[in-house]
Every structure is written in structure tokens, then in C-alpha cells.
Length: 101
Image (cartoon, rainbow, N blue to C red; front, top):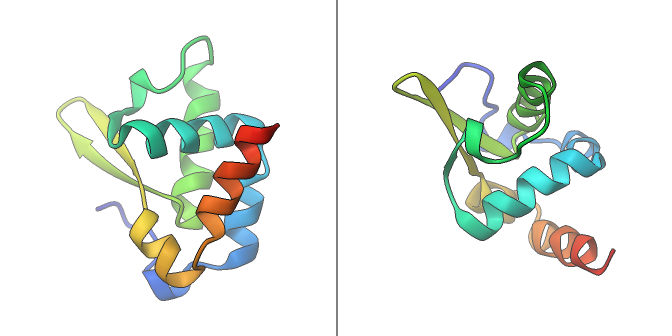
């Protein structure tokens, strides 16, 4: 894994909430929650690569996603187990609230 991934005990609530507070990042998280691990280039279209790279960084550094190299691209997946262990019910509540919006 990349060095920027926090250990589960290092995941902080304020960082997770900040990461999830952006609508584009919530779209990414919803897609990963629905579909599982995905190549980074297939999650969203119509957004510049530099913008997406910044969103991946925020999600990865906050502990919301895993990012791992696979050939010439990176695969992204949701850290559901770590988030559920650290903050039980948070991810489900945020995803449910986002569905209602």
C-alpha cells in the first residue's frame, strides 16, 4: 500500500467528515460502496485528471479509501471494515443521507 494510508487507529472523525463533505467525493464513495474496487479512471467521467487526483488524495489520507497500484493505474476501494470498526454506523448513515438528497 501507499505510505499515505493511515493505520485504522489513526483515522480521525474530523478528517473522514471533511472528506465526505464534498459532493464529488461522496459520488466516488457511493460508487465504491455500490460496485466495490474500481480502476481510478473508471469511477467518474468528465472531471480532469488533476482534480480527481486531489480527491483521491483527500479520501486516501483521511482513511476513507485504499489506493493500490495495478499495472499502469491505481485501483480504489472503500475502507468499509476499518471505518465501521472505528465509527460504527457512520458510513451507512452518511450513504443513506446522501441517497435522500
